[in-house]
Image (tube, rainbow, N blue to C red; front, side, top):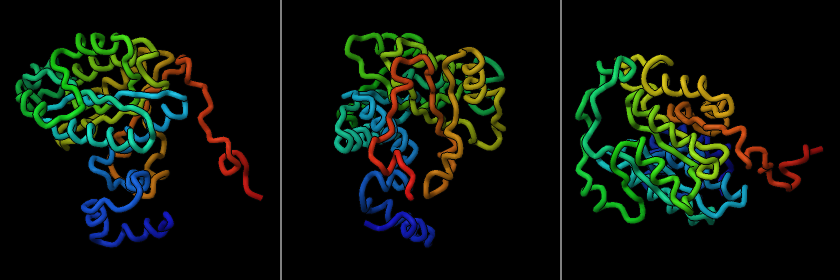
Length: 273
């Protein structure tokens, strides 16, 4: 096994990261930490969610993508879920949510109508369905499809969500996923927000778009908070913009929130002499 410090130096050599990404050498956990996996932001979130579930003694979780469009993201999420499932030893169900008809009309300035408009990213539902093997495509208004899915008996608790709905209004509607029965989610739900920095002319800030939805969610709920992982980019051996797009929804009143998940071996619980 190559030490992390050596890998860190190697990946700074021009071309090494591209070769590593092409041939996918080494352990999956290492590739996740170095951002080598396909869609590294999805890989990180799914892997961390699975490890959390395993630490809590759970046998299954689900992972969501809001905003499927052509289906490439959902296909990648499905593949990563299968790989992480084999590695960690828990079942991972994958779901993709979309209207199926493209973006609806914007509902005001917070939806960035100067960037997005009705009909963008229209999908042909049968095309992604033909490519998927285990993931389920859920079509319709998320205000209806979220509770319809999550209130089914035996639903696997959500551990990771990719938000790619562009609009403030659609994102806020999707946050219903965080206020269903606590048993339908992990105590900390890893989340990725696609539309908080691009495109540049959007001039993203906490009063429009996804950032506005996050800010208002945190103001509305006392014991539910969506927060970025502080200094995540410095806890990983490779820095990339996606690390600032990873948030975690903390449910402070969740029955499992305070369960200790630190491994009990000495390397984690004792300082070296």
